[in-house]
Each structure stands twice: as C-alpha cells, then as structure tokens.
Amino acid sequence: MAEITIDGLRLEVERGTTVIQAADQLGIEIPRYCYHPGLSIVGQCRICLVEIERMPKLQVACHTPATDGMVVHTNSDKVLEARRAVLEFLLVNHPLDCPVCDQAGECWLQNYYMQHGQHDSQVVVDKVKKHKAQPIGPNVMLDSERCILCTRCVRFCDEVTATHELGIFNRGDHSELAPYPGVELANNYSGNTVDICPVGALTDRDFRFKTRVWYLNETPSICPGCSTGCNIVIHHNDERTYKADGARVARLKPRYNAEVNQWWMCDTGRYGFDFVDAESRLLRPRKRLGSELEILSWRKAMQAVAMAISETVRKYGPDSVAVVLSPQMANEDLFLGRELFSNLIGLANLAFEVPKLEPEEGDALLMTADRNPNSKGGWLLGLPHHHEVSLATLLQVAREKEVRGLYICHHDLGQAVADKELEAAFSQLDFLIFQGSNSNMVSEKADYVLPSTTFAERDGTFTSHAGRVQRFCQAVAPLGDSKPDWLIFKSLAKALGHAMPYFEAEDVFAALADEEAAFAGLDYGSIGESGAQLSPGAETKTPAKTKERESFF
Image (cartoon, rainbow, N blue to C red; front, top):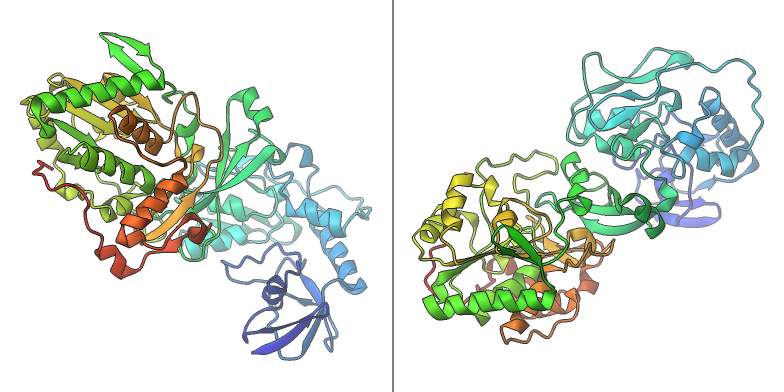
C-alpha cells in the first residue's frame, strides 16, 4: 500500500493506483479527456496536470502512479494556469458550434472552459477547416472540427471490440480522426463511442437534433434486449417536451455495473426502444365483433375474458385452455401468471417460451443469443424450457379442437411458424386472447386484446442468464389504458372470484421471494440499483409449484 495526500486529504491505495484514480476515491475531481477507466492510459490530452511536491514539473494525473508519501495539489495557481493554457490550445481550431451541437449541455469542453478557461483568445489566424457532419457508420456522425484527439474512440475499437475501424491521420494541427479507407464504423457497439466522446465530435444519428439534454430526465433501468441484462439509464423528455412531439423516451445509455456490462451496451439494445412510443402500441382493451373492434372498459374486458375461460373449462375441462406467458415479462408477471392459471384455475397447459424459426446469434462481449430479458426467471419459477415446448403440437391440438382457447402474452407467433398454420389453428378456437404492448399478427386475429405496459412504464425485476436479479423502474406514464402484466392478472383473478392481495410490484416480489427458494431473502431494497446475485445452489433447488397435471407442453 501507498499513502498519498491530495489537497490535504490522506488516502491509502494499492501500489499501481494512479493519482487520478486516488483522487476519484477521495471525491476530488481532476479534469480529464483522454482518460477513461475502461481503456488504456495514453496521457495525451494534458488537462489532468497536477502539481506534485518535490517534482519540478507538473505531472499528468492519469499516468502517474501513487507512491508512498506523495503530496499532490490539484488546484494550485500553477495547475489552474496550466489548465487554462491546455484549454486555449484545444480551442484554437474548435468551431463555434455550441448552439447547434447535440453535445451542448453535456460537453466537457464547455464545462471545463466555464470552470477553468474564460480567456480571451490570443490567436488571430484562421481556424483549420476539417470535415463536418460526416456519417461514418449507421449510428454515428463525425464532426472532425470538434475533435480534440483524445483517442478514446480509437482505443475503444482497438481494445474493447477489437474491430479497429478508427485512426488518427495527418500531423500537427491537421491531425484528424477518421475511419480507415473503405471501412465503416458498423460494429454492434458503435454507440459507445458516442458515449465516451467528451466533446461533440461523435454524435448519435438517431438522437441528433431531437431534443436538448437539459429537457431530459434520467431513470435507472435494465435493457430488455437480451438475457445479459445490461444496466441502463432511460433518458426521457419531460412532460412539456413530449406533449409537443409525442416522443417520450429519447435514448438509452449504459449505466456502470462492474458485474454485468461495465460501461458498455450493444447497439441492438441501445436502439431497440422504439416500440415504447410506436404507433403499434395497444392502448385500450377491445373485443372483436366480426370485422369490427369494440373498445371495452377494463372491468368489462376482465368479465368477458373470465367468462370465456371459465365457460370453456367448465364445458371441456382444464386441458381445453392453453396459456403462453413470455420471457419478456418480469419476474412479478410470471409469478402471478403461474399462480392464476396453474394454481388457481388449474390449467395444465402453461408455457412461456416460443422458439423462433431462425435462432439469433450472440457475441463474445455482451449480447447473448437469447433475446429475452427474463428466460432465467421463468425457468426458476418452474415454467418449462423452450425445448420442452412444442408450438407445432399446440397448433395441432388447436386444429383438432383438443384446445378450445388460447391466451397468448406478448409473443408474435408469426415469427415462429408460417401464417397459414396460425390461420388454420386460430379458426378452430372458441376464443383467442392476446395480452401485450404492441400489435402483431396474433393481436390482429384475437377475440380479446388486453394492452400491457412496456418496461419503461412500470416497475419490476428481470433475472439475467447469469442468475442476477435486477430492478427496472418506471420512467414514463403508461400509454392509454395499458397496465402492467401482473396487474392484469390480478384483475382477471378477481373477475374469476380469486383475491390477490397485491397493490404494488414490490408486494408481488415479496410474495415471490417468500415462496421461491431461489429468490429467498431478496427484496427491492437489497436488490438496489446494482442487482443481487442468486447463489448457484439456490438456482438448482427451485421447486415447480404448478399443480401436477398432464400437459402437451
């Protein structure tokens, strides 16, 4: 260990810790551009210069290791003058783009200039002109004039994705960031280069000119794009802004979690939030009357659905209704769905996964082949794995009228089987119910449609493929009359004559943790914003609490 003193505060750190890392531990901010904790250290922007006693020159804090007895000053007159000089050097050729730059409001060049610069330029020559607004990939726009050559993006492509698309070309004040000739920044993590760019050189083509960052609120959440469960922040417009243009969720950004995704997230998850505010959103319960759709209140919808299920079960038996929940649902939804359909009603045919016709592919970094956020949660609750579920068998027994009613949650079965097979099966059903957030082939054919909220409009938990339970929080209000899935199940249980004593998602999770060995001892408080890891032993000891009935699944 080494004892270091920074601005009068003492700290013991492990040998090899740099001065800037030690200052971060003390809560002392040292300006930085090129330094990023997830990348190699190059020490080239020079904004992190500090004064170290017994050293004749200022030293870069990001590259200088802490030694025992070292005394550091981060705000001496000598340091502040050096920062002003570095900022002036960086701004010599910087364009006056702030009013139209998407980075305005979160630009470190602006922030540090206001803190340490505020000088009159001594440069009277014309600025060097470089490329402006140059698309370098499907998601990233490059403005070379704004670049301060910190090389964060270059090191990210070299060290994290190992795809090597970017480099620094030319020399002197004509040095310029650019992709290599004939190469496009098209790896599945390209959006991270925008995140780590400290200025407005790299901007997001999807977010560009949509809103100003000072209109955005931030809510911690979990990416629903795959089973990794990357920690994210939902940036959403305040009410004044989204009422003007209808866009509520503006963008998703990665949130640091050392155990899951560190500082990164894939582009598939980053840009996969359009469904939250899409025109395909289902807004109100409805019933199909021939070719017409009748809008229902929730009370009437629940009564009608309860009547359809109970009458079919009474007439044909509990094997006559099949329910397919979804790994897109939260732990709370799957738990109440299992309680309602299996334990209270006694249905035998309950599943939650439907394998697609063409399986997805994962990568070696973050993205998994399982594009659902909560497959593991369903398995731990005793729901059957996808290899135990035969959609072909389900459709066959529907065609043969062994199953008279289907209750489908979220799944677009058109991605799993041919449309003609669905048409043949659906035509033989007494009823088809769809519950989900967005319309698809199933909702278009359903007799009853129950609109549910998206992950951005509710609270809940997902369980990642690694067995980590993580919370996501409500960022925006539910669209229309949509409700969380667990609340729909509670309302349906009431219409069927069963009371469920839950008022919040947290209440449902408390009951889940009380009943399920894998989740024992957990609550929303202990999960927190970083998640809670399930013990490997607990994962394998979860009993299936469904009633023992023969099922075709």
